[in-house]
Image 1 (cartoon, one colour):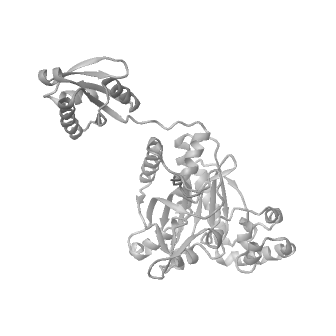
Image 2 (cartoon, one colour):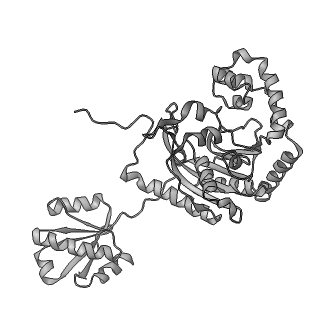
Image 3 (cartoon, rainbow, N blue to C red):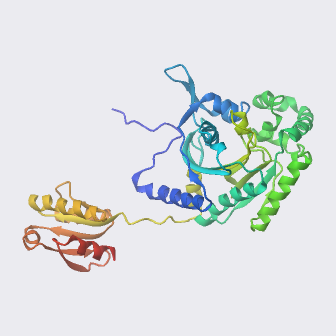
Amino acid sequence: MEKMQKPKGTNDMLHVDAYKWQYVENSLKNLAEEYGIREIRTPIFEHTELFSRGVGETTDVVQKEMYTFEDKGGRSVTLKPEGTAGTVRAFIQHSVYADAQPTKMYYFTPVFRYENVQKGRLRQHHQFGVEMFGAKEASMDAEIISLAMRAFKEFGVKDLSLNINSIGCPKCRNKYNEALKEFLNQNYDELCGTCKSRFEKNPMRILDCKEKKCKEINKNAPVILDYICEECQDHFDNLKRYLEVMGIEYKIDPYIVRGLDYYTKTVFEVINKDITVCGGGRYDKLIEEIGGPDMPAVGFGMGLERLLMTLEEENIEIPKPDLLDLYIGSMGDVANLQSFNIIYNLRKLGLSCDGDHMKKSVKAQMKFANKLEANYSIILGDDELSNKKANLKRMSDGEIFEVDLTNLQQLVDIIKK
C-alpha cells in the first residue's frame, strides 16, 4: 500500500524540532508581555464575508488564495488567510471597544493561502501577530514597529532594515487614485488581466502586482506621499519623530502599499536580505467596516516559518533544552516493575524521567539513554532493590553518586543542584 503524503504546501513539525518552535514562541510571548500585550485566540475558520469585506475583494488573498467552502448547513466559510480580521471580529462581537482603550492583543495562528509553493512560502504557515486598538496617535504605530524590530534583533538577526510609507486616508487617496489611473491608462493594454479588473475599483492594488510586466510599468508611477492630506502628513511626520527618539533607523519607501485593503496611513515592512520578514500598518476604518464603531487600530504579522528560516540562514543557534534528567534502566522483570514506581514518584517531584519499555539489554538501554541525552542514569537490579541503594551516574563525566532509593528527594537534590 502506498504511503500517505502530506498535502502540497504544508510541513510537519517533528518532535526533534519542537524546541525551536517553543523557543521562538516563548521569546515572542515574553516580548509582547513587556509591552502590556495579552493573548487572544480566534477560530481557525470564519464566515467568508468577514474576509471579503475586511481584507478586500480586489486583493490577491480574496481573489486567488482563500480556502473557501460550504459547510453542511450551506454557509460559506473560509480558513483564515490572515489573523487581523478574526481578531477585529472578536473585538467587536465581545464589545471590547467599550472598555478603556487602548487594547493590545497578540496571537499565534495557522493561516491558509492557496499560492505557489516556494522557499519560505507555504499554503499553511504560522503567524505571530499583534493588534492594538483605540489609539490614533503615531506613538502607537512607532510602538508596534519597535516591537517588530526588537523581536528580530533579540534573536540575533543583524541584516535588518525598516521601510515605512503612508498610504493616506480615504479622502486623500481618492485624489491619488485619479492621478494613478491617469498614469496607468497610458499602458492599460499591457497590464495583466487581474490588474485590469482592479483599474476602476482599486488601482492602488496594481502597485502590489508581482507580474513582471506590471512591475515594470509601476516603476514610474506617481508617489502617494505627494498627494496625502495635511492630517496624514502630520501623522507620518510624528511617526518619524517617535522612531527617531527611540533610535530606530528607517527608510521611506513610497511604493509600499501592502497586500490587504484595510490599511490606512502608516504601512511598514521589515526587510532581511531583500526579503520581507514582517509587515503591517494602521487600519483605522476596518473596525467600522465590519460592524463596529469608528475606532483606529494598528498591527503587524510575522511568519514563523520565515523567522526560523532567517535564523538558520544567519547561523543563529537556538539553545537546545535538557530533555531528560534521568534514565532508569533495569535488569529483570521485578526491577523493571519497581523502576516505574520510582519513575512515577520522581516525576511528581519535578524530574523528567524515563525507563525501559522494550525489554532491551542493559547495554541497549544505556545506548538509548545516550540517544535521549539523559543527564543521569541508574541501573536497577536485584542487589539495588535488596540494599535499597543504587549508583547514580552523571553521563557527562561518568561521576558516580550513591543514592538511597527510600529518599528520592536526595536523588532530586543531586540532579537539580
